[in-house]
Length: 368
Image (cartoon, rainbow, N blue to C red; front, side):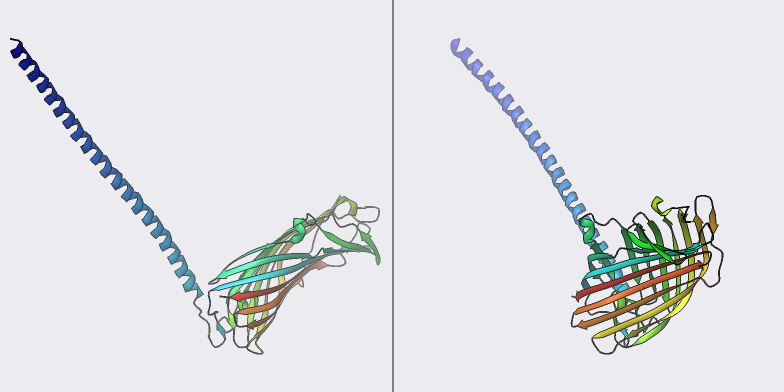
């Protein structure tokens, strides 16, 4: 009996072990299958992420290629290559230093009918900068060393755009570092003009008729090369708006000084001529003049108890003159450019205003 009982007990334990092992094997197979599914999903996810990343890189690369192709197409010259060509290289690097100055003159009759002249000169601004150009696309960075020491707080911002057929510039000024004097009935009196504030925005544009043989950029941005001397007639237009505010120390009603603020807006239209002179393989000299007439204006002078509107006058005018001299040797070049802008409106006996801007630039560059 005892032997039969032992045999039965052993058989029962073997059966339980077989069931457990079968269950464990089934669970193991199930886990392996689940792991295989997860591994496959992870693999597909990684592949999809890699494909997305590759697609993004390809998309960015394709976008850059399309952008570069667009620049290349724009860079293709449509000029007479006997006179104007593109540089053989695509990159241009320049270092430069700029000098800028503004002069402002206000004339008229004071509250007693006596003639006065305010002459104000901004302090000369010096900036240092660098310019990088790739296939005609240019970017610049410049700063005024005096700003780093806190000695100057004037703000001037310029944007230039030159092509062979059209172009121009935009200037924004916020100036309040003036010196000068007041001439009252022939007597000069030095005044403190440090509180004078001039704010203005000016837009100038031109159109050159001889765009196949004459290049403005050759003289001012070096994105073209003028091989032979040639000139062009120009059309020009400009728009300017702004105001000038006088500080309290310049207001003295006993002496007749009573200007508080002048608002200024005008538009001009004119014609001129530009010439690029190439005396040899290494030199380029540019000279141009663009006189214009004021076709619309709105000037108002404000004092403590009156507002005076500047009357219309046919002979109100402005002029823009440019000069450039460039010396090239191999891939290197050096030069100087200057721009003079002036406009005068009104009548000196009643209310007149003249503004002059001058900018000179010295630079050195390399093409590569």
